[in-house]
Length: 80
Image (cartoon, rainbow, N blue to C red; front, side):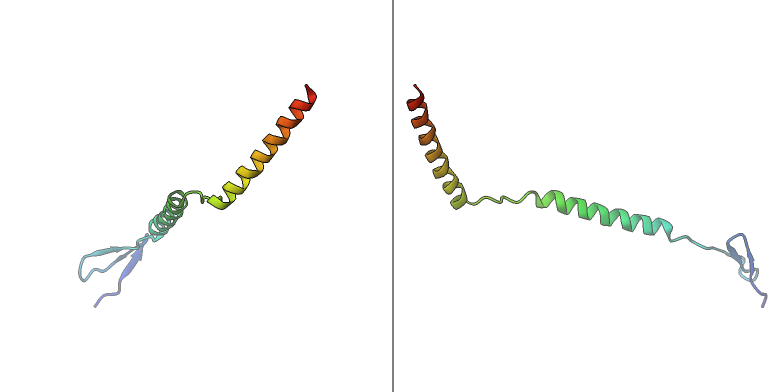
């Protein structure tokens, strides 16, 4: 049995006549990182902004706005 020859990143076995290339894992790493980034971006986009104001808060703000409008209308009447 002959020993394998190693040359230029290939392992050549003379007994079987086949060549095995040393494959890089860099494309798989780049692909994995790209998939993770895509998943994070899609999650952020699909989650969307949260609706922070509920109906109780909106009604409270509406009553305060009405009170302010009444005050402004009375100030407008006084100024005339």
